[in-house]
Length: 177
Image 1 (cartoon, rainbow, N blue to C red):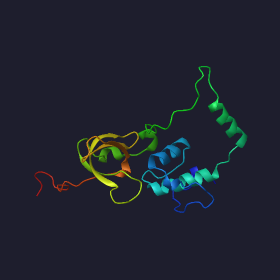
Image 2: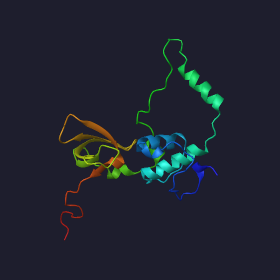
Image 3: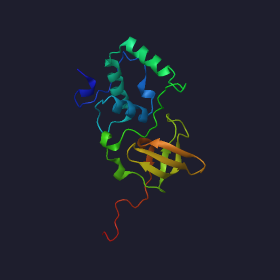
Image 4: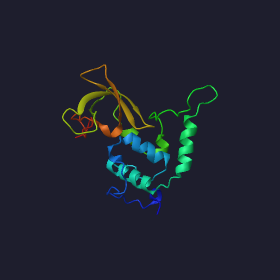
């Protein structure tokens, strides 16, 4: 069965035959892989579930070694201008919101709003900072945030590394009893 078209119930166990640990990749890298290979995942899947889906898809891929080597050598060969033909790195601007089918834009923190921002991949002390939102990009589901303690730092983070802070007035509307 092809993992990209398997049932919607997610598998939580990481495949044993995969030597690469996709759980260490950033969420945006996993989403890039998922979009490139059209792997089906739940729209609200957490990064751990994305890593399992990527690992299962990767495990199922059959690679033509000769074709892979030829493609690698072709990319390294110089073009007519004498420059090496290497594709640009993933820039975080793709995939689009329509492809991801996510609706987080409505609930996104707005520019100027203070948020808690996770700036490291681990949960060690100091991995969360107080920041203010500069921009939210709905197509990539990323934020540009500015560290409140060091305003020279502008950091781009995936949506799941930014947490809105409560103002204490949620649920209270003007004129409500």
